[in-house]
Image (spheres, rainbow, N blue to C red):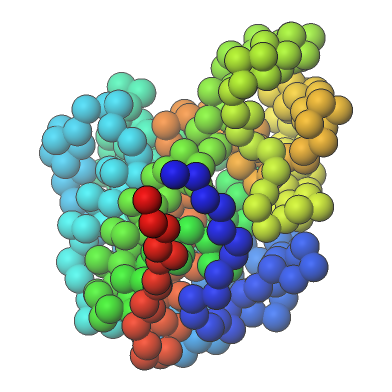
Length: 342
């Protein structure tokens, strides 16, 4: 049975909206947020605005004996499953805001360590979170060195762009869970399960696989022609809600261009631009957030399997906001189905 349904309202929100093709969060455009905040600044601004307290000190990540935890998993296990397991092991706080802060810092460390673990690198004990940037903390652990300022800025802004996007699939699932009175931790588990799907949180991973299949920019057209003949889905293009183009992708394109210039490495960016041009010529589709996120991940040396986990650790901010708001709505979301007789 194949039936298509349009967007359906299931709750109310004051957190964000997509209006006339633009994303607004708490009264600010995504462009204003991208230019004016790093991830921790945005978290502080939005959490305090929603009524959170005790934001003076960012909590250190929980000590989860990561190496022992990772031995439970095969290196091929999806990063979101590892992320979900690690945040589930964090001691639970009574206040969901404190819980969210703890899960954010622990999730960042877990994903950085998991990236090293899957690449066969040594896992060092995490230092206290003294940095003013979670992206800096992630890269310092993952790369095993002090990251360049342009690398930290690039990942930080990717995290900002992923922090919130209205009632997307995983956020919707989280709000369904929250409406039943589920604890924040359990609502996060629902969101992670939905985010793991390749059509949602896994799209950047699929784009990175495409880049790996194309050796050089000159091979883009032949690869695309072959993929279209096989009727393959070309991940990273088009968006259900941004019909005229994803404004977040425009911001990330500029960021990827600057990263290529600062790092002196243009190969991936040039390949991506060629692919973008060919896809638009052939299918009239523009790149979305997943496309340029994949470009930036590749330039930072982040493995493709880590992309969904980075999405999850970044979206924790938006999930916390929506969990709080749904609790204040105090109404259970009760969807219905359209019965179709045989």
